[in-house]
Amino acid sequence: MKSYTEYLTFNTKKRREYINITAQVEEIVLKSGVKEGLALVNPMHITASCYINDDEGGLIQDFDEFLEKLAPYDVKKYRHHQTGEDNGDAHVKRQLFGREVVVAITKGKLDFGPWEQLFYAEFDGRRSKRVLVKVIGE
Amino acid sequence: MKSYTEYLTFNTKKRREYINITAQVEEIVLKSGVKEGLALVNPMHITASCYINDDEGGLIQDFDEFLEKLAPYDVKKYRHHQTGEDNGDAHVKRQLFGREVVVAITKGKLDFGPWEQLFYAEFDGRRSKRVLVKVIGE
Amino acid sequence: MKSYTEYLTFNTKKRREYINITAQVEEIVLKSGVKEGLALVNPMHITASCYINDDEGGLIQDFDEFLEKLAPYDVKKYRHHQTGEDNGDAHVKRQLFGREVVVAITKGKLDFGPWEQLFYAEFDGRRSKRVLVKVIGE
Image (cartoon, one colour):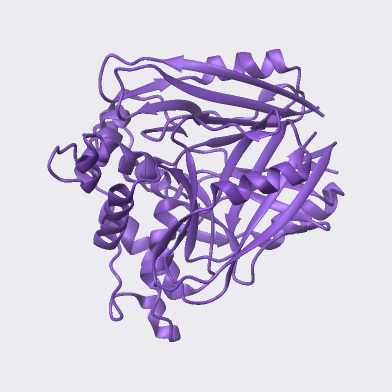
């Protein structure tokens, strides 16, 4: 069994951003030399998500509005803010969009359908944050 | 390490359907010859989910109503529809129910609790769509 | 390839509880002898979740209130209750928080960021329930 690990770093300009990282993850899979296996991709922070969906600007705005409606940014709303934080909304948004994705690697490539694109969703950005990519297989 | 990949195809009659695919995935695990490992099951489309829960008709209706309430089908509601699509709701529903499941294989079988059943949830059907099953292990 | 499987058992006093199981999973990874690989952690029941987020009491209350608002405990609300059950809310809460987590193992340890903690979230407790931990790698 082969394994290969790499860490990507992001520092978004906005509080919330949705970044297509498909090409970066594909490159890591190529470097790993794994032809058949699995790739795990997850933020190492708890106010961000990795998810797979369409890279279409309108849809990404729909997602952002949906999350903001369900778990709005609000300094007064969250008990978590009694610790001095202001990012309770970002923790909830991350729970809704999930933490990690696991992707099949087949014949050396991410085994994606035609519209599957891998995103890093930042809900509390403007600081340096890491994404782990772990590839295992043969 | 062994690996085995198979693709299932679904073409639902209704826009939304919840299909129990446990037996099909179990058969694939058997074919793979893997005794100890992991199975990844995911739609290759971005308006569907694979998830694990109870195969009980009332509960499935509860799920469907819950999703429809949070992210209703509505031609006018979603920015994504400016592209000519009408399935913005299906993309959001998929985000809520997640993309993939990863299941342990122990002694050659899906290592499930007594009520765990694996579902393909279609949120924008009536066309041919694929589900990937990837098994790795030994 | 190595593999190692262990089952944890929980019997919560309250209907809903959020239990930090990071140390228990770390110990299992250590026992497995796997240095590079993946750990899968999932409840074997369908009214519970495993998830990764902060171990901060206020945030956990925020999570609980958020889930209770979206999918309230209500004996009359869910079709699932026509079977005699009263835990429809717990099935929906579990869907929102997801089933499993997959965690990278690097140099023999859970490859976590500084605040990542692994939780067992029970939404219908007060009875014995199991969590599966499966480690694969080398």
